[in-house]
Image (cartoon, rainbow, N blue to C red; front, side):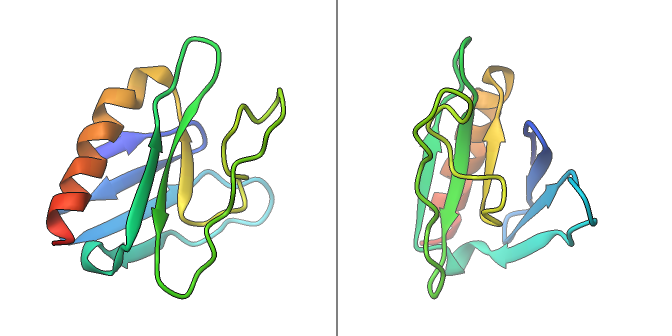
Length: 106
């Protein structure tokens, strides 16, 4: 299962979540973590006016908060390795991916 985001993709194979972001500058390595390690998820659907996001919460990492500005539209910053902005067209697929991760984590 794969979801195309604004600047990257999120993949889930039933056990591992892989987030690959399109680089702005040096090429970042994909972030990979087990669904069983996820302690929570945040999901906001994209609308016609603003992108939504998917964010995974992991133990030992501080969740990046939403930025409240016109440009960011209430999403976590790009630098957060555990979140990805999603367009409206990917909202349904992202919702299914989040539900699958929630089910796999326990």
